[in-house]
Amino acid sequence: MRTRQIVIRAEIFREGRQYVALCPELNVSSFGGSVADARRSLQEAVSLFLEECARLGSLQHVLEEAGFSHTTTAIPQWLSPQPLEIEPLAVALKHG
Image (cartoon, rainbow, N blue to C red; front, side):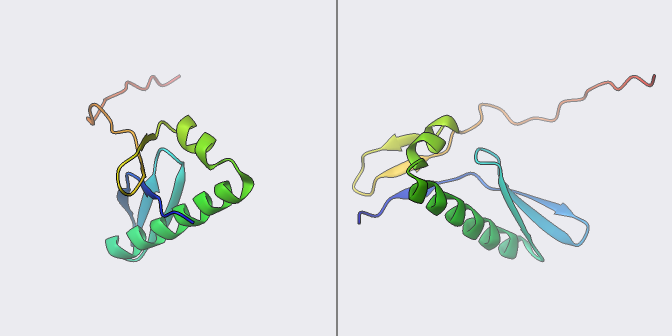
């Protein structure tokens, strides 16, 4: 079996005493007691999710639908889409 890499974007947030790690493209998240724990936990959760997709024969479809692009370098990779901008956006909330 050939080795493939799938490069994801991880976003990590603090929620109380826990850290939540999210891969927004795949809608997979996990948590941990530290940033490093949350990152490791997310890697494991994404790995399990992708292994199940591969087992079901839907890995390529899932990655393409999520916007990943495929490279044909020495080690084939799927790269997550990168945002053009990341910025805070204020939204008015009307009380009714």
